[in-house]
Length: 65
Image (cartoon, rainbow, N blue to C red):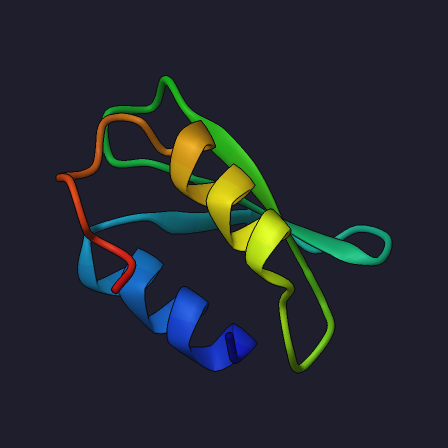
């Protein structure tokens, strides 16, 4: 999946970028309880996409489709 699609879905659901240190970007959910790391690659593997979905548990089901 393209990174721009993941970032667009995060922004659309109210998530915000917390930091840009290193080779990942750290994103936080609107409730403030969940965070995830998004790699800076142009393409993100399916396994990493699933991990991002699990980490952002407060977002609605199917938010990243």
